Amino acid sequence: MIIAVIIGLFSLLYSNNMVKKLSEEERKKIKLWAYAQHMITNAETEQELNIYLTLVESNNTIPVILSDGKNVISFRNLDSNAIKRDGYIESYFEDIKEKNEPIEVNISQTELQYVYYDDSSTLKQLKTYPYYQLGIVALFIAVSYFAFSYSRKSEQNQVWVGLAKETAHQLGTPMSSLMGWVDLMEIDKSYANEDSFEEMRKDLDRLKVITDRFSKIGAVPILSETNIGEQLTKAIQYIQTRSSEQVIYQYENIDFNLFADINVPLFDWVIENICKNAMDAMEGTGTITISCFLKNKSIIIDLTDNGKGIPSGLQKRIFKPGFTTKKRGWGLGLSLVKRIIENYHKGHIFVKESIPYKKTTFRIILKSKNNA
Image 1 (cartoon, rainbow, N blue to C red):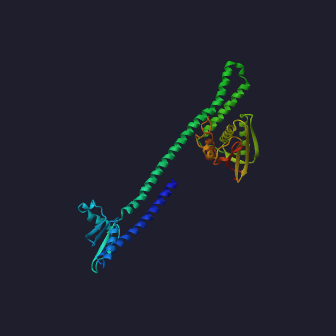
Image 2 (cartoon, rainbow, N blue to C red):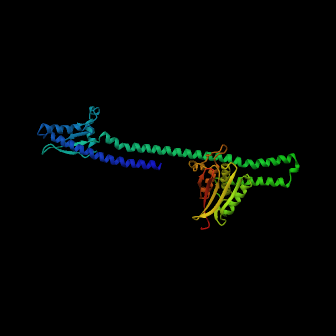
């Protein structure tokens, strides 16, 4: 839209400059025409007369009226159909008096005539062209705006649909587990023991975490100063207990003296989502390397896997709501990750690098409190 406005303004300035130049050229032509008109009566040879007549006849685009100042003496290049109407010439004469300064023609020492002229059809079209173009630019801007609005609404719809499905998916696992325990207790009362209740409490705690996470989406989260190294380790440990034994978690360069303002449940959700994507990319087998260090007064968190990688053309699109390369999924996880980090924590997240089947690194940047 900005480019369209710039193009429109440039076109308007350029066209106005062209109009000015063409207007000057037409005035020069009329001056030459007026001179030829004057010299016809003073031509001394037939050759001179033919030259001046040729100059007069050469003007076949610019409407002109020769007048003594009050009355029309002759005219040229007026609308052949319009001049048949009564009073048209006189009316047209009054109109063009205001458009361009007349050119004097000395017929004799005591007699003056004046050449009044109008803009040629080409010049008139050139004058109106920028406004047509601005209209097209305005139409383009309007269409772009509505297309952008539609895209945003569509994106929001995808977010809400995905969020609803993700909520159902997240709630499904602990609820299924609880229902299983209840069914077992109804079949065999011996299952109603402390171990079973402990497992049920874990499922209830999981439901509480899920509810807490989703309740913060769309609301302003409360941030608190937190040791990022410690919290990152806790989040990884929680995920590790729920991962396949074939997924190895490797810590590398973890600084436990870094602090930042975060919302812990949402931060844990970010780490969980990235690790789940890493496990999918590695198809359940591989290594996830975690780093956390200070660089340029910012906390850098790198999560690296050795999965199939992300093509360069998709590295920005993966954060768009609804985008997914999985057969099952709603394309919401990384979109929420981006919103949580950038909208709620004022940080940044991006794919730092991706080499197929070697390494893919997601980088999170948070503002450090250490130098605040």
